[in-house]
Length: 252
Picture 1 (cartoon, rainbow, N blue to C red):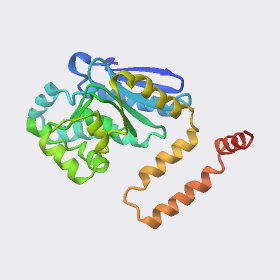
Picture 2 (cartoon, rainbow, N blue to C red):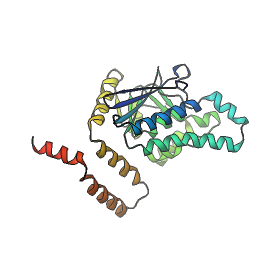
Picture 3 (cartoon, rainbow, N blue to C red):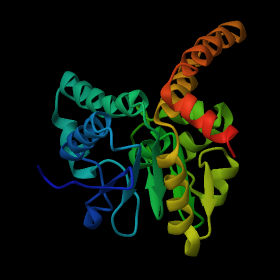
């Protein structure tokens, strides 16, 4: 292991900290491998209820490692395609994980780092955070992360961000629909911690059903979505969590 990701588990929360502060937590192949291993660990560990991803030091993540990217210019087309698919597999695994993933963003979340945050189910941002996709300004394309960006903020804002590289602060990111919640810098840790606590204390089966249904709705018609909802509704009533939670509520 290269210690690119520091993993801590407490109170049902697995916190994965990108651990290259001297490189602004730039993503390289070893970090992708460690993030994939961390997600698998979270999936298999019943004690983990929610996954939080954050960055060490001043920034969340400045994007892909530029030295690794520059070296790839001498690779074959197939080698680069496989490297891109390897990065994309991280987002696929995040989407499939039956537990919420939450990005805690302070400082800069740029390019692939912004994509990593966007791939999470929730983004909690500090007011001073900066979000952006400056790849075009470097002669590159936000190709892998564009799928998530476009689905998250819609065509017009996504095209603007992808082609101009302009940066959004936490408040602007929330207004654009990119960040889920934004907090004053001084309150960020406490407020983000409270959101993670609420998720960790929620029914694991209810969260898993909710996440699975939520993303299955992509591309479904209105009728298909309602039929899927009926199926999930019926199955969720048979879980021990449902019976226990409802019984406890009625006894209040």
